[in-house]
Each structure stands twice: as C-alpha cells, then as structure tokens.
Image (cartoon, rainbow, N blue to C red; front, top):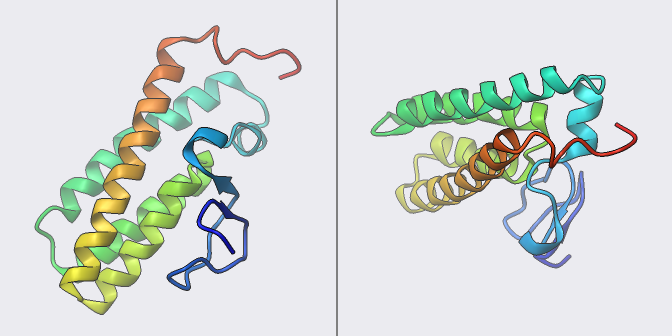
Length: 144
C-alpha cells in the first residue's frame, strides 16, 4: 500500500487501520461530505452544528492533551476519534488513533510524533470547516 492511498480496514505503514478513505491532500476532501450528509440525514443546519461542535470539542481535547499524563492524553485522543468519525474528518480520526496508542504506550518519541500529526490534521480540518461555515453558498451543492 502506498502512503497516498488508504482505504477503510487496510493497514498503513505504522500498522494502524484507517477509517474512511483519503489520498494526497490535493486529491481528497478534508471533510467527507457524503459521510457527513449521511450522519445528518442531509440536514444542512445539523451539518453546520455538528461541524461547529467538532471544532469546539477539538479545542477542549487539545487543552486536556497539553501537558497531560499519558492516560489523559489517550482518553482525550479517544474522544477525538469519535468526534472526527462523526463528521468524516478521517485524517483527524487516524491521527487521534495513533496518539491514543502512543499515549497508552508512554513512548515520548512516538507520543511527540503522534501529537504533531494530530495537530496538523486538526488544524487542516478546522481551517476547512471555518472556510465552509463562512461561505454557506459554496457548499450548497445541487442534489443535496
């Protein structure tokens, strides 16, 4: 398997299992619109609310992660996994899975790498969500 394409249930280079599907940053949606639409039954107000909740919850979880003990880090990462899956932020979910494992293993090097990956994925998702929420007409696509 290449690093540019990961599908649900397949192991990537570090042996973890990805949820959802993504490829290179230029080729994928940061938020899986189809998944989000299914989770919210196509209700645009609920989509917006879920995205806003995800951004707020991510911020709270990062506060818990900052300087937290490994068990607290693993618990906060676990919460992020569920939140990210709910809105279709697959890269965030994958990075949170890695951080959860690293927090449980208490390996400083792995923990730092996993945290950096999660921060990058979360910032990317938050920026995409902010753009989406500030431009409501942009994502009002026909057929949805």
